[in-house]
Image (cartoon, rainbow, N blue to C red; front, side, top):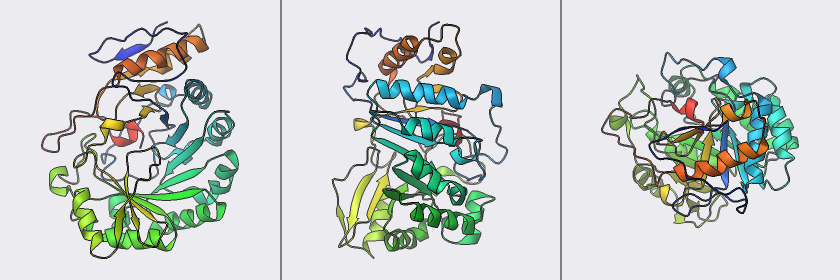
Length: 347
């Protein structure tokens, strides 16, 4: 059975005897896989979901065993970093199975997690024991009423308790992620950096990705660029550009006399496609070759096929690299070409 490929570009055959490394048509080595284990979440952030979100039927979701199988195949092909995402990954039943199995893989240097922290009070220590090295926590506001507005249903106190549990668990690094929207939370960037600094966290500010249709704000009117955030921060902090790289798209600055780094993920103002090393596996088994394009391969079809062949899965992953485009095509001035929301994509 061959992979089902959704792309205007035909796949290029790759000899199975080639060295086990994934290189796209532009010479970029793919060493980083982001795996979404669910499209569901216990929050409803206004930039991530519509207010009437429809989730995938459970039978269409990859099983935990299928996720482990695909993740293992990527590691065999040279991937060094896996990030588990969602939706909110920690609300998936028995999800620790994934962390425990992937965390034990020889050759995987980093197993990381992106979470909203609502479940960390329960899971932080067990995640660390399972091999999670670093953790990213979404936190868009430190004001309870505003936090609830942005998340529609969120309890800031529960999230802060989860962050404290993550600190106690002893992860190598904790980083905060904040999506910044003009007139929603752009006036909190200094408070957020001070919170990160006081706790020895890193923090990244993210320009909103135009994925899916949202109802509660106009993305162009809410756009607040990384350059504007940096300008605001420099009025309060001594920031110097850093060459630090954590394998993702953040450009980092370091606060003077501090270990805290302030990062910027800037798909609009400072396109980061040129050195992209990432692909994404959705909870339904689609391998997305680009955040902002629909080029994809259906890996669920392969892992549920009758042949159950590791060689077929490996070959499909190798062939998929030919479909990785040069970059995304985000345009804030038009309705999104991509109708999948961020929770469907994997954060």
